[in-house]
Length: 104
Image (cartoon, rainbow, N blue to C red; front, side, top):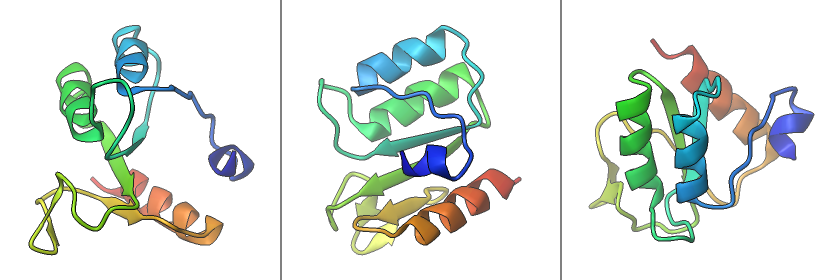
């Protein structure tokens, strides 16, 4: 709802598997915003890897409430990873989304 209130068209998915299906369907997606930990047997990292196979160059933004996750190692993010840590405010979300979308 925060993304929609910022003017973005949002295509929701209840799980990584559902999101993957939507990507396979060829929907126009400019940014994948995914939690690192998700229900349904597919992590956000797994989803991101599959999404990039389908749509190379897709912008991806992870979010997580966990300080230690599959994308953070010894306090550092894996190279090329954008992360918005929870909890975050609407203004932080807006700024991070804009930054990730503007990356080349």
